[in-house]
Length: 174
Image: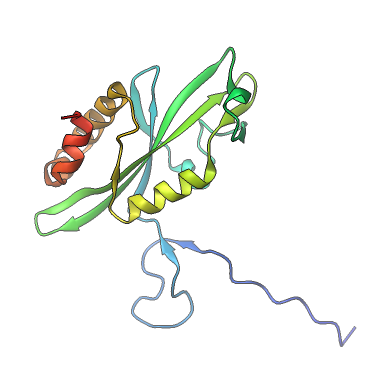
């Protein structure tokens, strides 16, 4: 027994709040902070937007109890409900805080069948693009763009006011 060795713990992908290094250059370098990213759901049929932080780990109320596949037909039928999951990143500039990155991903949920459609890689890539201050909303329908624009502008008018014109024009569909 004395010669048995435990397998080494692997350093996995770490999601943390705040700066993990706090100025030093040791353990934790390269970790990712999601402190300024929020998941906003757009219920396309009801025309409403809401934040559900559970989406950060695919455990939102919308996703709970649903097995997701990359096949749209799995979620068809009675109870089918389409959503947009929008990753919103806030950053700061001289004028103040603003909506820096806004990217939308498609999702379909059928709670009755306990099935849903989403492409996980797309969701992860869009979250990454949001964190890199990209605006990607052109694939959204006009009604959903308006719902998102109203939600973001009413949630915090100061953030909306300081945001890039690209976000405002893309959501206004100019």
